Image 1: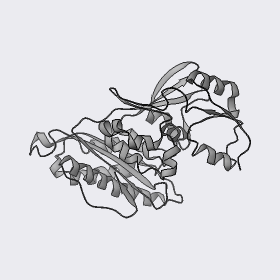
Image 2: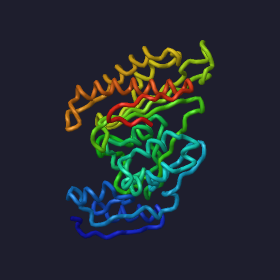
Image 3: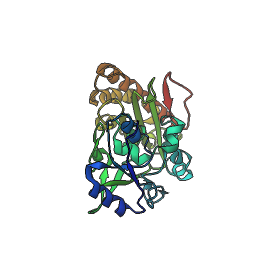
Image 4: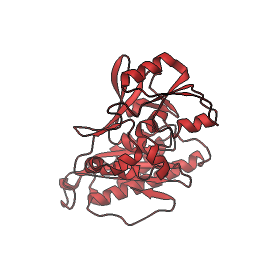
Length: 308
């Protein structure tokens, strides 16, 4: 049961930040409320004031530019349906389509998802491969942080009490990049998630030689540890590898990625189980991305797994 609270509806970010600063620990920012209201019902959070940010200009917008900017109050459903997202980075929309369930997607927001730092976040995992940064606003002005620095651990971020997460900025991959997102789980929240992107010089049948080499690789692993992470050492195993002969490098990269994660035993499985699953699904994600780079779409499907 929800305890009584006062709902504030500021029109500007400045008003919202002033409310948060003045009300202190008695206040919480509110957008979709899918996680906040649940915690309030459970009695784990008891704010006496909610500051609704949905009316703030720009918070509900998706904007183009050198980077793709997604306002903090944009819902998962809006990302899924956005023609601009589809044109600039179609995988983002495809992944948004598989977040939780349609009820959550209709009200849950991208900013709220990242601000709660749920370790089982689909978007946080994918966004790491897009060099994501968050824009924070406060009475002191604006600042930008890489997403990898913003998310510090489970339900912990670098946001201070009087700051608002205003937007998320993504750097879309170059046109010759192929990517895949694979998540596995028997619960609504995934047990693990892997995002992989391969940039290939002369993709789609350029032939052998330097023209079919991987010039940039991105791998992010989420949902198994305290926060999603990029697997830099695994990425290095793929650089300058031929896209037509990627299997051995993918196996080596998957083993390195599995060794780099920091899983814990929980209801989703033991730490050893999660490491093994990371190796399996990194290989699968890389195989799918490599096939797409060659102009093919794999038909292989996996039990209890979603491929985007």
